[in-house]
Length: 64
Image (cartoon, rainbow, N blue to C red; front, side, top):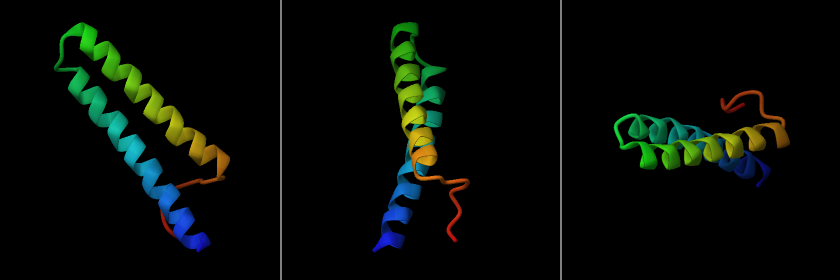
């Protein structure tokens, strides 16, 4: 059960980081007003991922 939770957190972190990267890539090809909103969403996604990493003491996303 605990292993499933840890794996779920790792997957969530990976998803949030990937989403942030993709949002920034889209923002680079979008008009300025929308790009600003996308970058803000990317910043929020990255901050949430980093919060999980810090809160759960995750040094890496690799499974043990």
